[in-house]
Amino acid sequence: DQQVKQNSPSLSVQEGRISILNCDYTNSMFDYFLWYKKYPAEGPTFLISISSIKDKNEDGRFTVFLNKSAKHLSLHIVPSQPGDSAVYFCAVDGGSQGNLIFGKGTKLSVKP
Amino acid sequence: GAGVSQSPSNKVTEKGKDVELRCDPISGHTALYWYRQRLGQGLEFLIYFQGNSAPDKSGLPSDRFSAERTGESVSTLTIQRTQQEDSAVYLCASSLVIATNEKLFFGSGTQLSVL
Image (cartoon, each protein chain N blue to C red):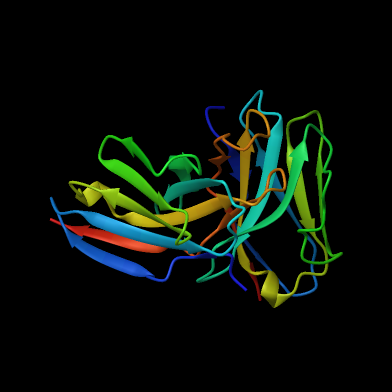
């Protein structure tokens, strides 16, 4: 059973609008969460993270929100730009050293 | 080099053949990780190295898979007697140390196709 779920395989947004990518997890013991971005033919790159002691972390146009009671996190990108078009992976620290558990990813398309 | 380098970038092999995938991590990174991504799936953790040691090999899918690291640098992932279900992108990542908040830096991956 998937421990990290990204239920939307794809999302299309107009340039300048907000993109909201969602992620749900199953284990309330998870305490560190990350988002990675992946362009075609490239490896994933780290985008932003959040610890369970916080409910929000902001870095420029990117904000991650964590709702621990709902076991849900979301990534907000505002304003969205065409260069943000990529696959976004949600990941959690699995507790075992070195083991990040990834979701299946959401493909974001930002249209000019 | 500046980033994590993987070779080959693409590998097509016949079922039953052995393949060897190579990863050159960022210089000075003590931790190295292997993941794979099958079509339509998320990244699946395979194994990590702390220095040259792999403390936990339970993520490897079968005993046909093995990995080693030498000189706290290059790592090779070997798949023996490849099967069609081994087809995937194999991603290597490295980090300075192993820690909860440590960023992973990924290579571009090796696309393995088993015919």
